[in-house]
Image (cartoon, rainbow, N blue to C red; front, top):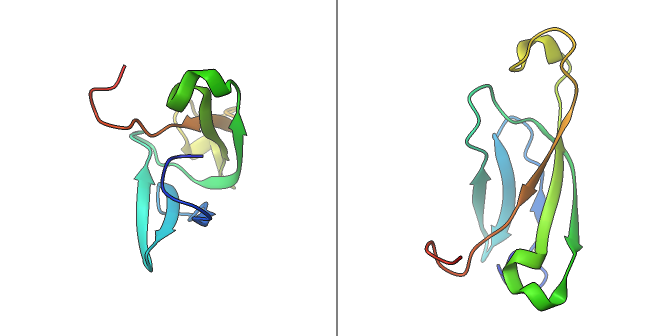
Length: 93
């Protein structure tokens, strides 16, 4: 899904502020650049459009916390969904 190789396991890595991929025996962390922390709770891969290459694929992950009032937005803030995509190179459009 993310172009990391065949059968690469992914984990939510609670408290790691990102998703974890186990590649060649080492963890690679996909960090979420978010000021108040990312607490991954679940993930699902999806191919929306096979004709769009990397733009048509992604990993969708939810995040939440047991104390949502500590998240950005304060009291009443609920869970969010984030889409992870990996570009073939940083300048890909």
